Amino acid sequence: MASFRAGIVAVIGKPNVGKSTLVNLVVGQKVSIVSDKAQTTRRRILGIHTRGDCQIVFADTPGLHLAKSKLGHILNETVRQTLDGVDVALVVVDASRHPGKDDQALAALLAAHTPRLPVVLCMNKMDLLKAIDVQAYYDAYLAMFPTDRAMMTSATKAQNVQLLIGQIVEMLPEGPPLYPDDQVTDQSERYLAGELVREKALRLTRQEVPHAMTAYVENWEEDERLVRVSVVLLVETEGQKAILIGKGGSMLKRIGTEARLEIEDMTDKKVFLELFVKVRHDWRQNERILRELELV
Image 1 (cartoon, helix red, strand yellow):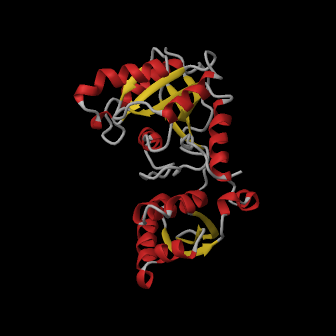
Image 2: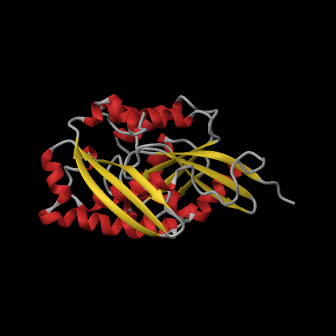
Image 3: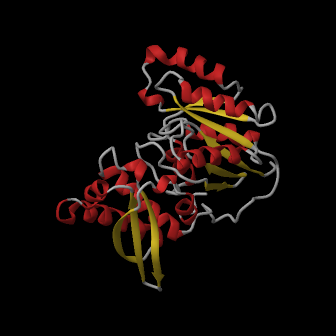
């Protein structure tokens, strides 16, 4: 009888390479919000995949980037700290683009943990890669992240993902599960509700809003049939507030409608959702606020 394997896998990469999309796909439900905006993931989030022969605990991390704010530095430090104490590093890169400075910074970060830390290289977005560039890009990423376990994937199309999982499982230590079989994340429904609101706001608003916006649950009341939840969208300027509210409240209504439907799916209950927009100038530079938001 084959032995059971279980371990923690740090999912690392630069922003917008598909880390959270990949984790959500493998776990089988949304545990990390996704968008095409950088810095969507703002804390380490566990996504737990359990099957008959293994349990993979994915530690999804913020994208490593050139930090320009206190929040940015905190996000980068989260990546560094996550690499300590894990069993495998899953490096996710954008296979449709030649490696750049952000990838080089990630390789330098990994160098401090190798050869002790095993590496699996996931070259994601293969569906966007031009045939003429396949060999050159593959060789360039493999030279930057040397490993004998590498896979080209498309998380959005579920291509080669099971092959990638097989490579990861081979590198996990033998041992019992780290979490109950039915647990899929370490995040509460309350926290995920705020994140779902932020995800919808990221998708629906203009480019200048995302980095300066966060969301948190101000109130959560729940009984057997109904969840009443109040979520605050926090921005830095009155102009950003106006964008989120929209003409006659139209944008805030769209955000709320889309988020409410997903929160109902998550909780299996009817949801009454209230949204508020507040302005706190330079909240990304304010350590007290960042602590209150549990980002420190």
